[in-house]
Amino acid sequence: MRSASTTSPRSMRGILLKGNTLPELWPHMWPILLFMLVVVTLGAKFYKRTLD
Image 1 (cartoon, rainbow, N blue to C red):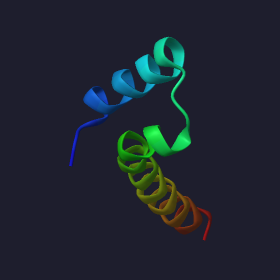
Image 2: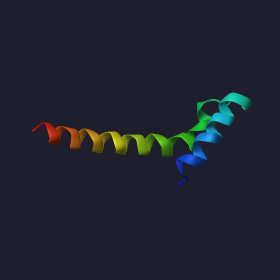
Image 3: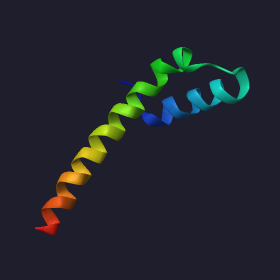
């Protein structure tokens, strides 16, 4: 798995300079989306626990 520091610049370069579409960006975007899903899920669980 690539790190976000590698994936983000590649994706931005593809969008801004090359005009890439979603199918071309998907290999670079799924690691960021997976990381975001894990962080949001864990954050919601811990936040709910602090409210109880």
